[in-house]
View 1: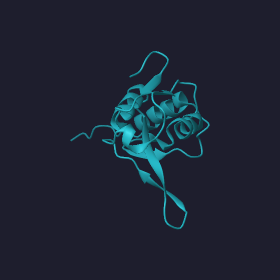
View 2: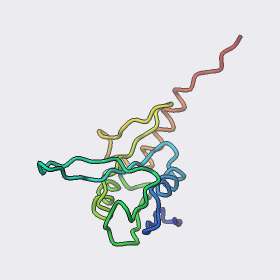
View 3: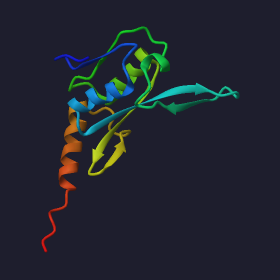
Length: 133
């Protein structure tokens, strides 16, 4: 499902959790989640979070297969745009800060590598030393 070029090959049989696991294997301090746009009766759009066990074929009409590029030098904004263009899905990438996942909004022009390194640094700085008795 992936290769050295840091691509996630998405097919009709791919589960959202498959994408999340591969993404996390490359970027352990980042988390990717998907949402689907829905129209309501008043023609306003809202999004519904997609569950990890959802199959791609059940949540998008995109032509398969799709290669989602997640190289180190790609920005959060580029990955988000690719997901909209290729899958018709909204994506939210969050960065780990200790035990909390923070939504990335102000720094979405940082690369995946920069975001992951920031999450690693913040998480390591937030660890408390062992308590001595």
